[in-house]
Amino acid sequence: MYFVVVPEGFGDEEPDIQFDSNLNHSRVVDDWVFVSGSVLSGAERGDVSVEMAFDSNAFNQSSLVRYGMRDDFTWNQSDDLCDDESMPDYGPNSNIPETQKCAGTDFTLGLKIKDQYSNESNRVHLWLKVSEGDGRNPIYHYIIINLAACSGATLPDEAVNEEVEWIWNAATKQCELPDGWEVQRDENGNITGVNKQSEEKSSGSGGGFMEDNMILVIGGGLGLVIIILLSVLILGKGDDEEAQFSASAAGHQVGAVQMDPMEAYVQQLIAQGYPEETARTYAAQYAAHFQQQAAAGYQQ
Image (cartoon, rainbow, N blue to C red; front, side, top):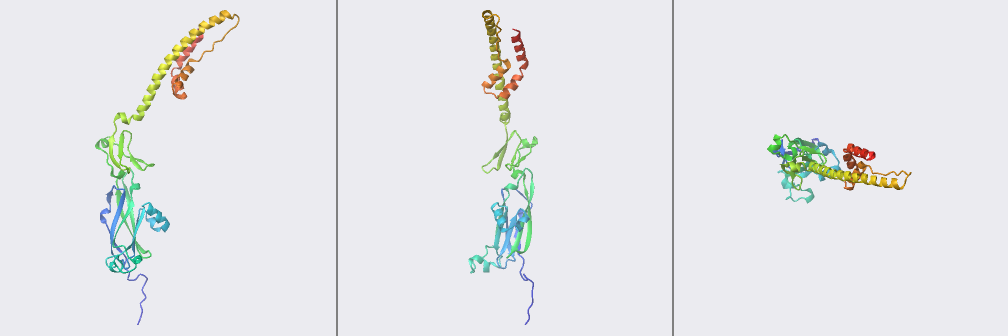
């Protein structure tokens, strides 16, 4: 009788996995990506595990970190897989304890791809790790997918002819368009259509500004007319009162206090609800007129 010493794992065939080849180098526009496959052989004890992640470094992280990545759908795992030969001994219908049974030969893993999109097409690697038992002798694979710009949203011919391009909003992680174009979205934020806004709607913010300025011009012009009339009345009344005071109080010089016409105009605009800075800026446009008006008052 004699014994033969063999290395650890001798006779243990490595797992052979068949992945869905249709996904490799395919164009993806969905929020999720799924990889399906089957264990063909090498799962003698029904303990084959398949992991998937966007980053191959995820496979070396601690269980706690990978648990958090699983909640974020950036890492996923399917374990306790059998092959056809081990199904009778370890499959769901076998007579072994439930904790030792495998889940089957087929698997499907999904990752959330929505946050990987931008306003440009993007190539993404889906990393796969196949291991058996305690994780010894892992085998690595990867699948390349091509993410369409803006989840595959297309621009109408009119926008293409005008050379309109998608704009990436890093804060909202959404594709947007320049002013003059409207992006329609569903309740999940996915783009459902693109429309060109009418000139009235696209210039809505600018129209509001012009409308405010028009009101300021009209209100300011009306206020200017009122100030001129009040100034004439004040000057006329001041002349009459000065003559009366001069006749009744000889030897006493009485100085009449007259409000500056420009300041009166500013106060008139402020009373109408305009900010003081805006009122003074607008009044400054009529500075020459107010100076002539003040000079005429002093000469009188």
